[in-house]
Image (cartoon, rainbow, N blue to C red):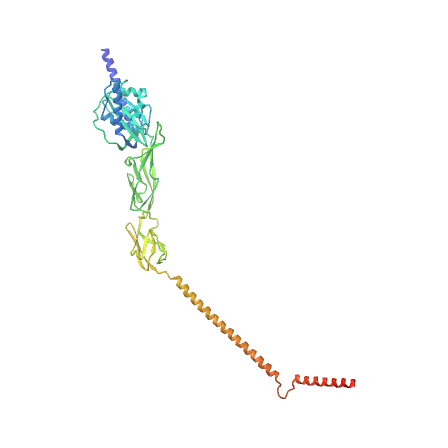
Length: 447
C-alpha cells in the first residue's frame, strides 16, 4: 500500500515537472524573436559524412546508422543556427537546449557540431580525434541506431552537425544542393531592427516600399560581425502621420500630394521612423532654350533636356532623334551639322516629347574672302601710289615752272631795258677812263 502511494506521489511530481518544463518552453518560445539566415546546403557532403561514419563503425563491428527524415531536418536546422550562435554547450540561439530541435519519438539523443572544416573527410577526422565526438559516432556511450547530418555554408564558412537518435523513418533520397533562407529563433531583445531608409522621396501618384531589416550579433566560433536579414513587414504596425500627403500599408507608401510626412513601423517596444518627402509629378519636358537655332556645317552644339517642374524626381532616360541624319546628327543631345538644311531634333523621356528646329548653315570660305580683300587693298594701295605720283608730278611741274620763271626773269634782268642806265656798263667806262688817266701820268713822269 505504502509502495503504491509512494509510486503515485512520484508519478504526480514527475507530471508536474513535465508540465512545468512545457510551460517554461512555451513561455520562452512566446517571447523569443527570429532572424533569417541565407546560405547553401551541401546535401552531398551530408551523404559522404554518413558513408565515413558507417565505415568507422564497421571497423569495430557496429551496424550502420540509418539517416532518418526527422533527424536530417533537425541537423539542417541546427547547422543554420550555428551561423548565428556557435555554443560549445550545444545551446540554440534562443537559449534552449539543442534537443528542442529534435523530432519526437527518440528516446536517446546526442549531437556533434563543428565549424570551418572544408570537406567531409576533414570534419570526420576532427570528430574522430575528439573523445566525446568519437563516442557518439561509434555508439560507445549510447547505442544509437539513427542519425541526421547537416552542412550549411554561410559567408564562405561551413557549419557541420550530427544528430543521433533511435527512431524515425529512413531517408531514401537526398535533394540537390541549394541555397535557402532559414528562420532561426533567438533570444528576445537580441535583434536590432531598422528601416532600410530613414529618409525617402517619392513622386506624387507613385509609391515606394519601406522594408524592415534586422541584425543579430554572431556569437561563438571564430566568426565575427553580425547577421543581417530582412524581416516580415506584416509583423509591424504601420502608420502615416498625415494620410493627405501619403498613406502606408505593410510598408507600401503611396504619395498623395507634395509635402513631408513621418511613416512609422511599430512592434512591441520597437518603433521605427522614416521621413517621406512627396514631390510634384513630372508634367512636361523641354529642350533647353539657349537661343541657338543655327549651327554651322562641321560644328556641334550641346542641347539638354529640361524636366518640369524642376523639383520633380521622376526623370526617365532621354532619347534623342534627328529628322534627317544626313543634315545633322544627334547623340545624347550633341547636335552636329553635316550639310546645309533644316532638321527637327526630338527628345523623348517616358511618355513626354519635346522638339526643336535647327538650321544648318554653310561656313563662309574664309580664304577666298581674305584674297578678295587683299586684292582690294592692293588696288587701293595702287590707287594711292598713283595719286601720290600724280601729286609728285604736279609738284615737279610746279617747281619747273618756278625755275623757268626765275630763268626768264634773270634773262630779262641781264638785258638792259631802253631808257635805263646799265650799272655794269657805266662801271666799266669809269674804270677804263681811270686806267687811261693813270697810264698818261706815268708816261709823263718817266720823260
